[in-house]
Length: 186
View (cartoon, rainbow, N blue to C red):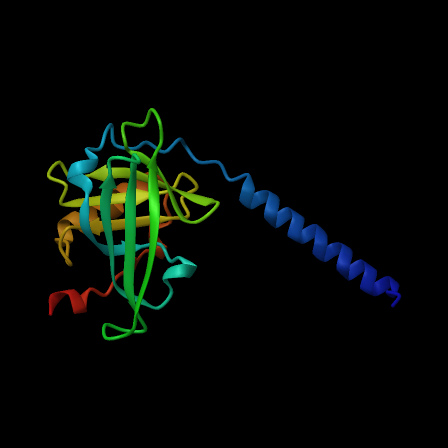
């Protein structure tokens, strides 16, 4: 099948526009993202409730999201169990297991999480309550952000503080979505 001159021009312009978009997305520069100085993984273990996050394709339709962490001392990684209810608080449970590996030299404030081999994602602990009651986790590209709490709710003042801190770190907080945790309260 031969293209007409007009069709060739449209394909060329489309390819050029796509290239510009891809280059501009990949060349976004952010200030270096600072993490907390250190994390005591033993204190970090246990259940965390998702309070809010930037939308992620894999979490579409989730309600009552939680993350459970268990330290595997023999192997030196954290076992991760994420679950939510799809479609509503009474929806079917959707879950996934993974592993989180502390990044050497980060004092456990940076981890690489793997749910599907060989892919790993950044899990950087950006803010952490001294009593390990709430945490802000994100990625250096500013595409992933989560506010987690040991309880299904978070005080408004703390939530607002986390939003302010995330904004100052360059995250698009206008895209934050709060998680429905109504089934955790029953």
